[in-house]
Image (cartoon, rainbow, N blue to C red; front, side, top):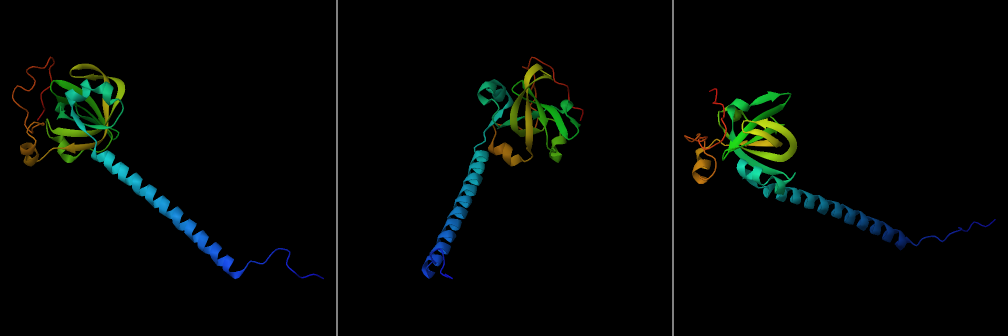
Length: 183
């Protein structure tokens, strides 16, 4: 009876080399996964940091160029247009005699209730026929993030942007009527 092994017995050093080789591969794979995750997080952060914003009049004018890309839209909320139903807040914002319809899918901040409050919304244009105070529009702005301006510091640093008080004669040159605020 032959008791010799049918395959060659590994030398003691070869087994150690296989273990070290497998560890190196596992460490390399983990490193690649960590680098990919860090690159993804960095890319997301940079994308959010470079998200630009437009006033309503600029955004409506540049709709073809903006397409369905995310951006920030700035304007003043028309108080008579605010309606909330099933977790979606719909309203209209105005800037430079241009009105845009907005559907906001997150809870608005508490200060949102102030009349003519300036807001910056983050979202994208959606193709759909909507009625605004200025007439029929072909798009509405779908928003999931809202920033409400509430400090005087912002106003003094950014005077060219929307101010907290509705300027006298704000709608004088506009070809449409906007309902007065209830409050």
